[in-house]
Length: 165
Ligand SMILES: Cc1cc2nc3c(=O)[nH]c(=O)nc-3n(C[C@H](O)[C@H](O)[C@H](O)COP(=O)(O)O)c2cc1C
Picture 1 (cartoon, helix red, strand yellow):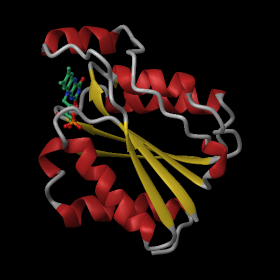
Picture 2: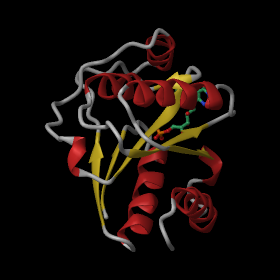
Picture 3: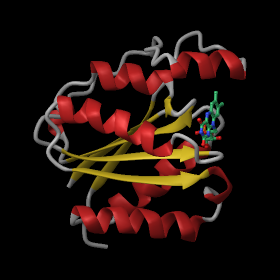
Picture 4: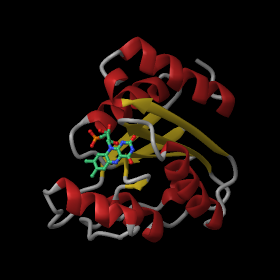
């Protein structure tokens, strides 16, 4: 199975989860990892939060990938102001080829406020683009270094999706 994981990560938590997810998927095929790179991202927490809250689509370095070439598409972001990070907003808006695909959405978060809302926003975007089945999971920032715990959550999501482990 050819899979791709496209994620944004500011302080590294979502990146860690994306890497563990890739290791699991690789037991059944290939998993490419792509990190979204915003251009001129604001550094101040407040500005980042306001942009995310307003569902801003920030400029990102171009990603020329046709998702129709993959059997499984995984999209990950931190929760920012109860929403996806602006780089993920942009990618969700511009991505092509997600129609009829299975999609795993994942987020990392701090307090937990807005996790469901953030995943709902992402789910709506991919559903509007014709995604077939959607699976979701979330990991709290304090847990990302607990590899076995992250693995259990990921295994649960992959099992639901029907990927054998
Ligand atoms: C601008 C900003 C806004 C955030 N908003 C939320 C939030 O609404 N809810 C929450 O649970 N965590 C929130 N967090 C915490 C992040 O989701 C959490 O630290 C996440 O794991 C960061 O992922 P990263 O290391 O991949 O960037 C926010 C963090 C930042 C920087």
